[in-house]
Image 1 (tube, rainbow, N blue to C red):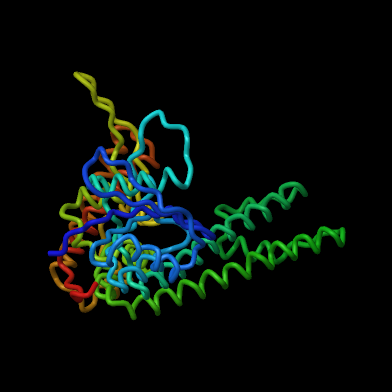
Image 2: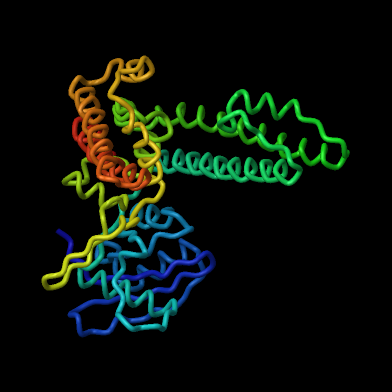
Amino acid sequence: MTRVAKFVGLDVHKDTICIAWAEGGPLQVPTLVGTVPHDVPRLVKQLLRIAPAEHLWVVYEAGPTGFGLARTLMEGGIRCMVVAPNRVPHEPGNRVKTDKRDARDLARALRAGNLRGIALPEVEQEAVRDLLRAREDCVRALRSVRQQLQGFLLRNGVIWKGGSSWTGKYLEWLRGLRFSAEAQSETFKHYLGEVDRLVLSREYLTAEVGRLVLTLAQAPLYRALQALRGVSTIVAATVVCEIGDLRRFPSASRLMSFVGLTPSEYSSGGKHSRGSITKAGNGHVRRALVEAAWAGRLLPNRTLQLQRRQVGLDPAVIDIAWKAQHRLHKRYLRLRARGRPQNLTIVALARELAGFIWAIGQEVKLPAAV
C-alpha cells in the first residue's frame, strides 16, 4: 500500500485554482503554494513539484466546473476526492473566507480524515443526468409560461369554469378564445405558442431520456425501479443517474439521509426536538421521490401499465414493489386519520419509498465496473 505524503487542498474556480498542502501532525500549519490559472496540465505539473503522483492525495469541493478535473488527475495516477461543500468542516465563528483559507482548510480536513468524498459518476451516466436536468429546466419554464398565460387571461376577465386546468377540454377552450384588440390577440398567441413549444420539448426530452438511459451500465436498475407504482421513466432515470449503484449505501436509512428525507433533530440533555426534513444531499432525487410518492395515496392495484413495466423482471423485485404499494397506502391512511396535512404526509411516503428503492437496488446485479 502506497503511503500518502502530501494532502493537497484545491479551491477551484472557473479561472483560477488555489493550492495548499499539508503533512505531519494536526499542529502543523498547511503550506500555501499559491494560485494558478485553471489550466489542468499546468496544475498537474505544479502538483508533481509537491510530491510524486503516488504520494499525493488531492481534494476539492464539487461545483460548476464538474468532475473533469478529478478524472484527469486520477488518470495520471493522482488520488483525488471530490467533496460536497456543505460537508466540509469549518471553524465556528470564523467570518473570514478567502481562496487561500479554503484551500488550507481542505488540506487540513483531508489530513485529519474528516472528509467523505462523493461517488464520481461514469461519463455516460453524467451525460444522461445533464439531459434530465435540461428536461427539468424545460418543465420549470413551462410552468412559468402557463402561469403567465393564466395571469393574462385573468387581467382580461377571461375565466375558465370547467374544472381542472391544462386538460384536453381546457386546451380546446383556449384555442377557441378570441380577443377584440389586435395587441391582445398577439399576446395570447405568443403565450399559447410558447406553451405548445415547451410541451413538445418536454415530450421530446422525455423520450430521449428513456432511450439513452437504456444504454447505460445501470440499465437493469432503471428497469427494476419501474416495478414500483409512480416510478416510471423520469423518476427511475433520476435515481439511476443522480445516485448510481444503490449498493454503496449500507442501509435504507443511509439512502434516506443522502436525499434529505430524514427529519431534523435537536436533542440535548432531557430535551428531544424533531423538525422538518433536513433537505440535505441531492435535491433532484428528493423532488422526484416526492412526486412519485403521490401514487401511494391510491388503493393498491396492478394496473395494466404497471404490469407492462414489470414484464421480465425478477419476481423478488415485483414482490417488493407490491409490498410497497400496501405499506405506502396504509401509512397514508394512518397519517391522514391523525390529521397530518396532505403535503407532509406525501413527504413521509417519499421517505418510505426511498427504503423500497434501496431494497430493489440490493436485488439488482450491476457490472463490477459501475
